[in-house]
Picture 1 (spheres, one colour):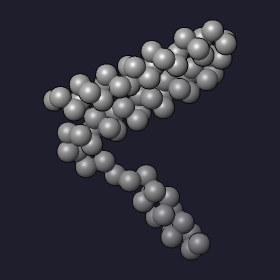
Picture 2: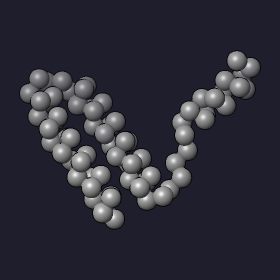
Picture 3: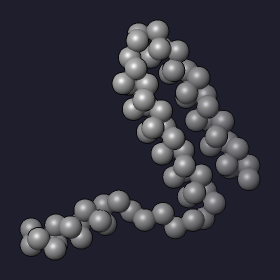
Amino acid sequence: MWTTIAILAVAAAIFWLEFPRLKKAGKIKDIWFFSIILFLTTTVSVLESRGVNVPNPLDSIQAFYQAIGL
């Protein structure tokens, strides 16, 4: 539980540091991209810290290329 709290605290600190700078510059697309990537990486980190088996995305890419014979 403490690792989850620590991960969420680090993610909140990163958001707190970066968001005002992006907002001040008026970079709305960058804010969306930053928020989505931060959310996904935080989610994966929390799942990994909880011991959930998260599949490797490169396995699906490798399977795709093996299926088409490359």
